[in-house]
Length: 111
Length: 111
View (cartoon, rainbow over the protein chains, first blue to last red):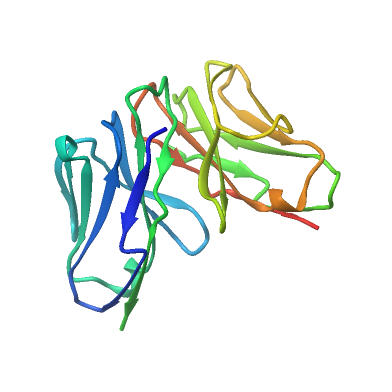
């Protein structure tokens, strides 16, 4: 099946810093989503981005489908950005909804 | 619209028992997927139901089963619980092949 790798596994930031999280995947994808998992475990949708670039406030994401990677940018980080960020993809052979998740990037933003 | 809801939020069971978890999708969503999250294995896909039919299945033993009702609500059942079944169980809903929205999860502890 499709493989998803995220880097770095851990990231410590000072409040106000910018950062880039990376997601590499092993096959073409029909669906790619970025999530933020809050301390209570809920996965919060950030972006649905199988290709192209999107922005939402201080967050933006870019997926280069032909090169099989996606980037999540966090600008002017805040302590509330702490948590685990997951990239999840759905491969071309999936019939329906079946997300394969990366291992996540654990982000800690220090005040 | 109300989000995805899951009940119960927390559950403690003993080995050998069985458990049933419930998920109510976002109104109008016909696809419901289940995922298991553990510290060792990360987030793994269990199965997906669409219009009361199982459309996708992950690599889990037959002790894990599910069903979907005509109102799109879904239940998953785990029989003969093992210690390794302790996990956060997440449910997601979506339309045909689009953004998946996750519920808050059910945290299952097996003693």
